[in-house]
Image 1 (cartoon, rainbow, N blue to C red):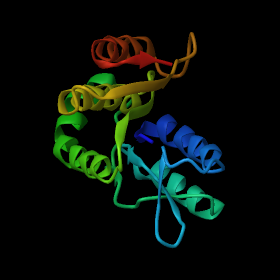
Image 2: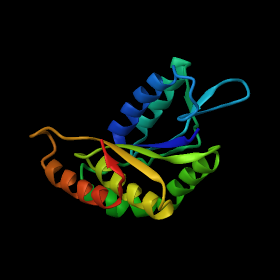
Image 3: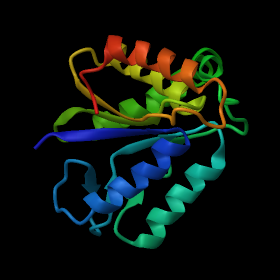
Image 4: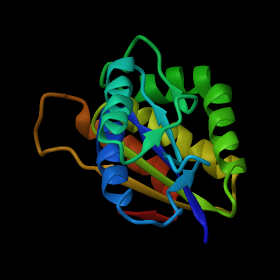
Length: 184
């Protein structure tokens, strides 16, 4: 059975990723989990955000559910956000954390019995999910050119609190269109 590695990027990606893993943990499949010798299920996921709050909440929620856990070594965050700006997430944060995050991803891929591909979860409207999500999707395609890759994205409202959300969405979609297998 092929294993999938999930990238949870930004606030939305991390929050929905936790819900997805909670639902999947009922299934006994090892597609999204690895099991330790003491039968603890560990999500095959890398958590990425530019603020620590959501990642800490995501890890604690999983731990308190007792259904699964995240690998605490598979997380990356900084102390500043991306200011709801795609370019800041893509061109500033992306290159600055590229090597560290790709090392986390490589390590998770190498721990798979049979690597099948990636599920990347992100938002299109904000800065981290859209900019960093597009950046790392592009990097994954360069690093793993023949792998299966699906991006699960959340679309913004027609109007919202982020004035540049339409630009963020268009820039994200342009990048994802070039490098992804599917859009969901």
